[in-house]
Image 1 (tube, rainbow, N blue to C red):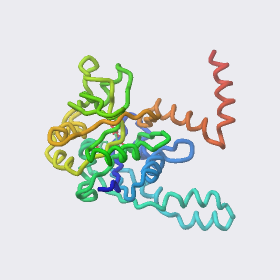
Image 2: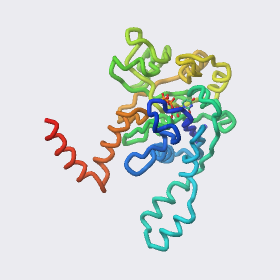
Image 3: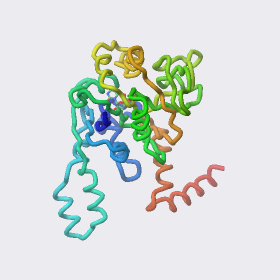
Image 4: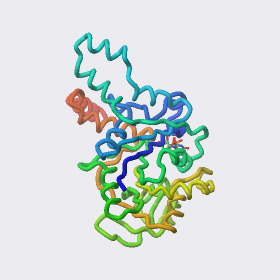
Length: 290
Ligand code: UTP
């Protein structure tokens, strides 16, 4: 079956970014001139996804507004002949986006469960709202290609420094069935550094079969007293195969302060309007710091 649907959970509290996230969702923080979530929606579209459900929570209305049309602004830009800007503004409305609210942020697993009716009986993709991925082939498309070979759930994983494994869901890989595709024995959420079965961490893209909802409906709270998607995936792996696909591209985690800063600098260095100035500025700054 074709993979047509994506779910973007964006209902978390964003506590690592307080006080900025008191009233504004971190998924709306701009990387130069585009909110983070727009990069994710663009990845979905480039991967052939047709329908997207965004799971939102309190204070997340700006996400809906961002993807809505703004007639006054559009008329104003048309009248002034600013066609380039008009195109940029209209780009975000040409997408099948749906919204649902998660009334209590009980964890990522609970956020994904909110998508049960939207997904129905189809395979689908979960794309975390605070993780931007870059590669020649979009990561979501890489997962869809794997699904077309295996017809099984497949998670994106990436090697992380060993002392950081306790921040992630980690896989216990059994064999590398094909280059970069692992058969998995176990999925462990936030293991202790000395107990982690590998350094391969689950990152923010998951291709899942609809059976995941049976697991989520009965999933007990795990690490942090939250309903963990990783725990439900580990149970799914006991009834059907779940693979891990190693991502070799670049991942930008904008969900914490330093990650957000690094992403802004790297994207700034590539942005035609600001890259030259930013390069000079960084050089000047480096001289002062030496
Ligand atoms: P994170 O753990 O990175 O987000 O969840 P958080 O809980 O908002 O952040 P901190 O740890 O408090 O700073 C990954 C993604 O899952 C969503 C978040 O919005 C984020 O995009 N999420 C998390 C939900 O939608 N609902 C939840 O209950 C938890």
